[in-house]
Length: 298
Ligand code: UDP
Image 1 (spheres, protein in one colour):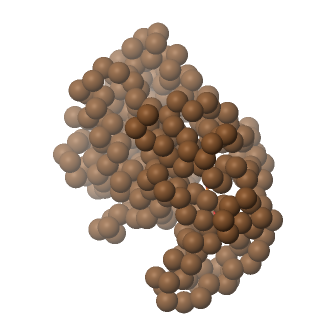
Image 2 (image 1 turned 180 degrees about the vertical axis):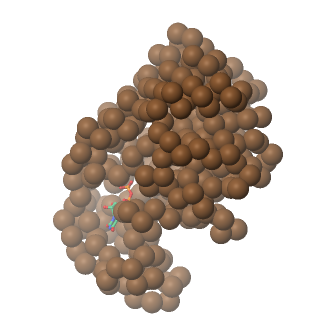
Image 3 (image 1 turned 180 degrees about the horizontal axis):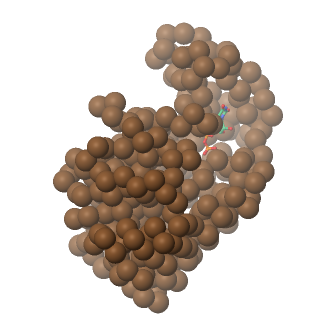
């Protein structure tokens, strides 16, 4: 099996690239290295530096290789940034994905696996969200991902492109063998920020919002380990091969932890106190969104 993996130098993409190589899959990576790091990619994978929005490059790659599937990780992922600069998010996440999907259709690539997000649910009425819970994003990031989900649904109905959509909750951790990790220097995610503090790379940790309607007032998130998420992608690929249907799946663990709980755990593991500074809630966040959890089996 041969797959094209966009964003393979990024956090989730590189873990999935390693998992695919480990299981004997032939991997070609396309990444523009805007946030990704080449050293995170498995050396067994062919690497092309370039943009998902570059139709000529996609045509070349897809003419030279017969791909069984495209796994599309490349995209912009920071919610507050999407609020400040929506056009960049729609360009990177929607326009470029459209170019990629169009190339897949023209080159008869049968399967497409898409990195989506729990942010497509917006403000759910209940804490637990299932895959059939109504989608209603509250920020440009979630909107951009839902737009691509809708494009894939329509393209699949019209020409049979088989799709797997994984709606990620919060992703954490790193490859247990240390071959890749969350290395993007600009990352703003909580655990990354806490570890950067421990490494002396920043002098405090900002705690964004402490009066949410949660037990300790801080936001609650459902964190999934990145290696489990990488395995989930390969499981979806296998399921698409065995079954002609499309799949949309929540990817979390079904249990949530507050920002305070996460920071307390980091301090406990490091056996050091953290310098935590209260800061205003971030734009694009919402109190009820903080109570979202993954639902399974409905
Ligand atoms: N957070 C925080 N300080 C930070 C980074 C994040 O208090 O330096 C909070 C953030 O407001 C949210 C939670 O931690 O409630 C998880 O944020 P993250 O950026 O990791 O993921 P998101 O849920 O926004 O995708």
